[in-house]
Image (cartoon, rainbow, N blue to C red; front, side):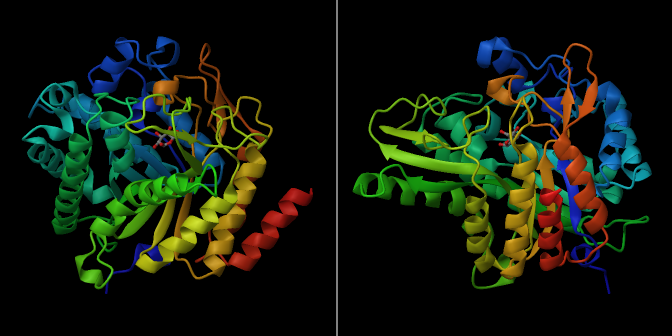
Length: 440
Ligand code: BGC
């Protein structure tokens, strides 16, 4: 009988993505978006954190937090710089990254796609290109040949719904269009591509030390705790209901059959949770979504609340509510991202503790949670927002590229140290431990 990895580990991790930290990514659609001046102050990712050269140092930082897992993404444009041509030096770099994970006892959690597309693919239509699925499956096949034996956890797409909203409704990601028709086609395409990749990964026969562990395939899905701006307003209520369905549930419902587990295309549901979404009907300008497709405004906080540097509310209750709702799927959950953007580092520790308390509470309610990844291991290039938002457990000085530890990193290392070996973490013990940490 094959061991279920979920019986073996609770994943304590930190997450990153290639374009946000590696640097030197000049052959993808995001680079083009940056060159077109579409980010805050026209900032470009440039060398970012230079993780491309500093990956050994960075994985040591993760290990020093007592983590047992590291989530990172593949940069497709570097591995396949033109259609069907594989760059051997880049595959070797990836293998070295995996070796560093292994040397530091970090279970690799690999996102195959995290927002960026090779320039050659975006130029021929991106996700809507007639051959998108062919290219994506061929890339997945190559990934399996090269590193399939060494990876157990796969995320086919990071935030597919955000990719569709940002690129086809919201103007905050390439290609920056507004078309409901294209938005729906992108979602459908990503559902098809995920499902096929799911099958492909499961059909791959592994050899080597990890062969006894079955592959775990999922997505990382962003969820917002939606609520009406004016609780009494019927249009705000309707907008909230519809947005909640389209943004939070449609994609998951499509991949998980509620009646039988046989039709499920998710071995785990990865949840990226940050904050709440407050929706109001009417033309009120919102910095988070300046060009919505409908007369509506989306805000991430109410006046007077504790907010991050991005204006996102401190709202752990939203994580509790979402986790409880996810229980109906009876599918393991991994928190694949959760974090706080803050230069001063005053609130991050409290954010971490209170969100872990929410996780412990949900475990107590019977929600099957198998891991927590903090976003992010390092400060990084935050897409359209440039380098201003500081999400890192380690700060990065972008002139010297030096990394330094935050107070939250110190706390997190203590949590991971005391709970990494517990399976599953005992919710009561975890809660008491977190309580004690905050008393000191
Ligand atoms: C994305 C990350 C991003 C983070 C903070 C998620 O939407 O997956 O790439 O940096 O949120 O905004």
